Image (cartoon, rainbow, N blue to C red; front, top):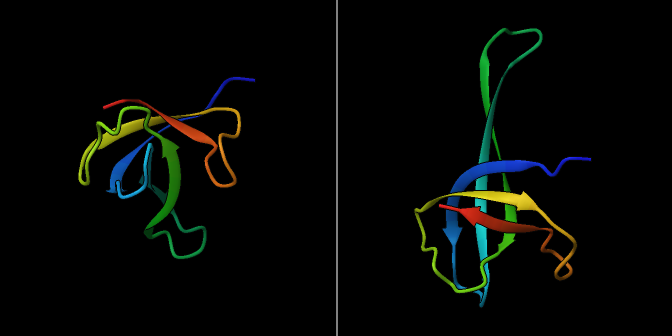
Length: 76
């Protein structure tokens, strides 16, 4: 099974080797036919603490690194 790759914005870098990435998705409401924006936060592994708040990054699925981390930063 291929690994999912998502793109989002770093919203927090306060934890060691971890960044919080907010990923936004857009879809059309089935009844209202209106474009809806939904966002979800993912905690991703950042080995060298290189990414800061506001950076646009791509994250990829990985094996669990901690209780909440299931993603790692692929690139900026």
